[in-house]
Length: 244
Image (cartoon, rainbow, N blue to C red):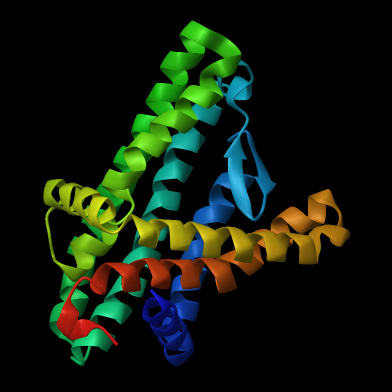
């Protein structure tokens, strides 16, 4: 596993231009919901939904804006994920990013968009249905649903770009990868928690209002691109000839 971390740092440091370009999409992806009527709050540079507000404080216009902004947010996030995984793929295979890759960018982004949309839609549907029946414990049910879905969705974007799999096959590939290499997921979680917690502790003195937005920018520009790189490096490490 140590080589995966080393490769992630090498990819991160060696392709700062592409990483910075991807980071712009990440900033937009997380900033759009924060400034829309979506009832969110910021913590550790991430956005969380105030579940009860979804059902009581939103107008029809708010809902339309939320739907549109969510679609754009997922689109920007999809583009960033695709760019990171393309960088990893062509760094490992030593092939230059040519016109055929640029043409495939739309296909990759569209398929990753479907993956992220499905994950978001399923969780929101579970949240709405569970809130209707059990009220305040809906958040717990949604969290459990998220844990159950994660093995199918976590590495699916990497599978789409690196293996060029279709959406349904990418879901199965993600589940298969995690079931065989669960330690990679644990390593990713440890690194993510460590980096995001350190960032949170560093900027908390700025106050709850300002620190949330500062963390969103810092995490989107510096930390989240590395975590996406680490995720992709873990997936491509399944090929013996591309290790090292």
